Length: 366
Ligand code: M6R
Image (cartoon, rainbow, N blue to C red):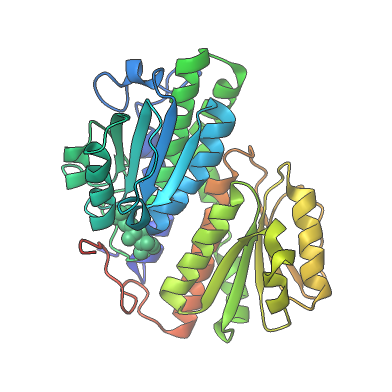
């Protein structure tokens, strides 16, 4: 039931702290992630993996895009990510010892399942791993290995808690791959510590709900919005744009901020709100100069910024602060305000938040 919440989506947003804690439970060791959490034989397999191919759709695809940044940077394993509807019809090259990873809330998405079967019939693969929220689903049954996200039933068509529990699972995969390659180290100890603190941090992020609700009126009359991020925050911008499209029917696009001057800057004027996700990471100075370019063209800026990022409120610049956080964890934290923003804009517009027009929760046909 929805309990005291007006919509399932809002309830599911607020459950994220609890379900992330459940997803982590029993999977963190002392200073590293346990390598056997993907099923029997998975610890031995982790060190044999030479390439990773991730396949998914929609929001799950965005989780895969974040994972690529994490896996290549911290585990050093070359990783590719592709939407399932493209992958399944393409005769791509599969390098030896590839781990084939599907990401899916439902475990029944037709294209993702077909991509898995396509991979299994083509060889080159070491093993398949499903990161999935529904136990006993087709994807889990047909994969060699699995890791369940413990998000619980997700009713809202717009995926929220499934996404953040996928991210947590993918960070555990990253750290398991690293451990299998180099044993214990300070980075793993740091991130295992950060993961343990995460449920509490998520609640701090959700405390922004009231501020975001006040901000949402600035969007209700708009026809377009542009989301910007860099590095692993680019897929988070994509996810923010997808959420806004799905439930508020406002046309939204996301760009890696460095691409602005290669085209989309032409769209920016005072009718185009620009939302930026700006944690205190190694790319924040570059992002800030991209935002100045937007402001110079009259674009109104809504910046979700880390506590210590030096950017100030002013004419046409709205800044909302999020707690300072390890930059690896930032994609998880900065997802929350974008989910809340889409939700409040949709409520203001009076759309059917939990069942947006034209969409189904589980896409079991092509
Ligand atoms: O069940 P899956 O994770 O495989 O579903 C994939 C997409 O259909 C899903 O994420 C969709 O994009 C959501 N409506 C996004 O909010």
